[in-house]
Figure 1 (cartoon, protein in one colour):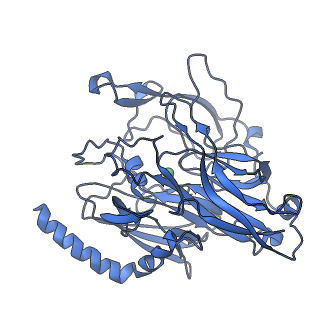
Figure 2 (cartoon, helix red, strand yellow):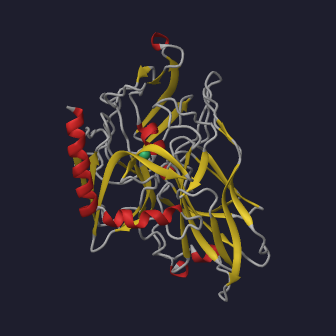
Length: 452
Ligand SMILES: [Cu+2]
């Protein structure tokens, strides 16, 4: 009987919340304040990170509106998790979603893809609990990552759910930023600089969450930074800050830029430190992407207030989604520091730091090409899409390509489909010029930009 099972689940959930997740609830309220002090954070201690995430449908207040969402620990804003290379990670996921499977994926982590580690093919059924347990390798890259529901082949979706349900669960709130500590450690001049974590997501508070597969991707949702609409950030004259931005939302592409302009001194992309700073006025951040950059206020730049915006962004492909310009953050110059302005080129150049390998100079074991297509499934109706790779319908249970560990391969990907990203670390990818045959549109963006 569903009713009886539900009662037991609720009791268990209350007990668990009191016993294991008290720390989680205590810090949640501050995430809704307009001034984003510290986002709600859980850090590892003594080499261990222990977290409990309890999945359920809950009525949560988002920007003053009560919404029924499927969330972790009955809050819309997931904690920022922080751990160091070498730490032991234990994250228990209790699924109290009604008749809906779910799971977790640790995006970009260099850990085993098998259970009990980062196995995003394993689904956790309703009223089941699963503990993700793995150690971060001692040489794991440091940087900004994220964790999220990677629900696939969801069962029992009576409300028009689709087979692949990650989008819907992430939109509801099941995603958060994950910092692997130490990215600034090799750079003594950067010690102690102010760090800001900005986890971007969106939600439309004017309508109930649509059924899975029916989210209006480009619709009128509000862009949120750590759960807040256009929060106020402060910086001092002469100060350098380290901004770490993760797109933990389901659909929105952001093109980050300050207005009036302020250079982004880009230090890391998608959890990978670059071999040198990349200075840009804007940066496009697709779903899953992260960018970590420095900003500086100098007397030449002046002390006027500015905004971090997402500029109008259009994405190729058959859906041809476009996203309007929106403000993300107000940045005000408050006070000044006596410290001289940091020379960022000097600060990020450290003799003896291991060079990143330029894989363009390494012999290629195999060349492969992949054509990703979205095609209409005429059997299933006008709106139904199927996804093919080299003409075969995607099937997560079939292995199409086997590669040899340690090989360097050149892959050419043609994509007229949705965004493509590499699950795992992509610091080793380089990007040749994209050449598309005339009958294919290259949509989305490449998963990584070159390190060199
Ligand atoms: Cu992911």
